[in-house]
Structures are given as structure tokens and as C-alpha cells.
Length: 109
Image (cartoon, rainbow, N blue to C red; front, side, top):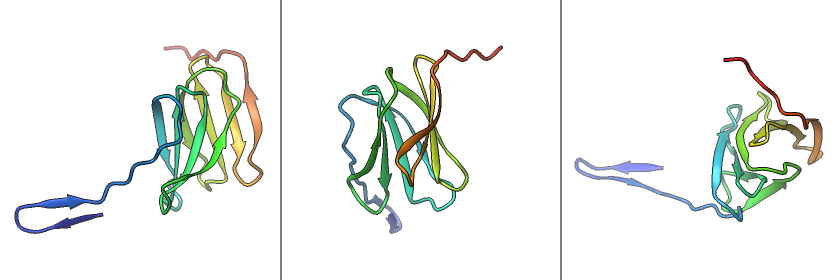
């Protein structure tokens, strides 16, 4: 949150810590704007409530660094792609994988 006077702007920053290695990507849920997902070199996807400073869920399954993340429009699922080219989709209510592609996916350029 920012507060301003004529010469200064102040931001209230919050530090989140739950990855064992560097974070490589993040996504903000667009439906409510209250969920944040981070992906890291530790092969995990961590979910955060922006109201809390702690991780509310940690999703595993990738064998290489997570490089991209996207929420479904309803924020009920999250998909993540890894460095190896695999994609996983998790159901956040059940906290389990509901889809995956272990094969390397190639997109023509």
C-alpha cells in the first residue's frame, strides 16, 4: 500500500520466504487478486495468500526448475511449466495433480 505526501512515497513491503532455491517466476490470480503463485529452481510451486506472510500450499512433482505459472480464470487450478518442457496442472481445492505432460513440448517459432 502506498501513502504519499508532496515529496515522498512510502510502500509497505512484505517478504515471503519458502523456496530453497531462487524464484524464477510468479503469477497473481486475476479473479480475486488475493492469491500469488511462485515457481522456483527448487522444482516447487508455492501458493501464498496476500493477506499472510507464509506459504499456504506447496505443490511438487516437477523434476527441473519451474519456469512459468498461470492460474485458471476461477483460481481453482494452477498450471506450471518446467525447464525440461513438462507441464503440470494442480487442482488447488484437492491439492493434487489433475493433469501432466512429462514429454518435452516443442512449439514452432
